[in-house]
Image 1 (cartoon, one colour):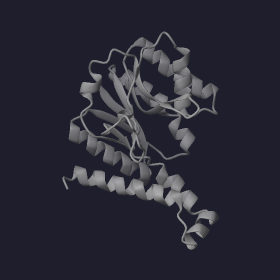
Image 2 (cartoon, helix red, strand yellow):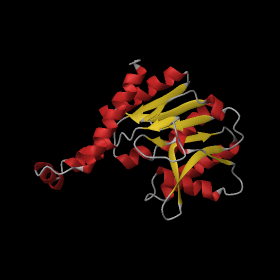
Image 3 (spheres, helix red, strand yellow):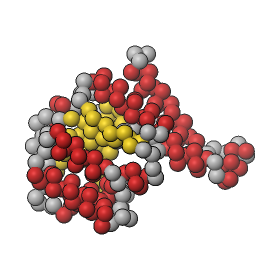
Image 4 (cartoon, one colour):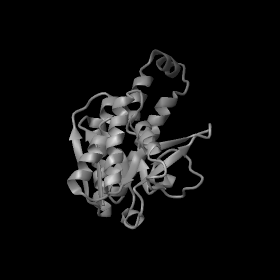
Length: 226
């Protein structure tokens, strides 16, 4: 199994990838990440199934896709080397009772069925441009119902660093929400939030960004042995 993905070469995601890269080196993983030019969020995330297909065809072995703003706390081979499934993915249960597939961490076996699934994932995104990458993957997986072996990962593999998970004590793969560096700053610069700050009121997006930067600093300290 090789860990794969891609990142944009802007400062936010370049820095995020460098943190991920160091975490992968630290735990002894093979990995291959593709650098791409910055673009709008939808265009960038729509590339995900194409990168997965490219790496499956290139390496002809199972791949573990990770978003570039992830951090890997331990070697993952023991969790995936004996997996007898086509894909392994986590589903978030929403308040409505519906489930949402999370595409930040996805394991893909290497076989014809999985290659066909990823090709359907690409086609589903093209045919349904209103869907994001994980919605189109969920739709593609649903069309293979009964034919595809799907292993459900725990939240430890898709752990958002400042969420609370009653079933997880320690994250295995931590997702650092690099997009906050973009959308939180944009929201903070709005007139409404500038006024709130002038009045001494809390700006929620500022708190979210502060939490992220604090956690990134902690992980950098962990890597440097502090």
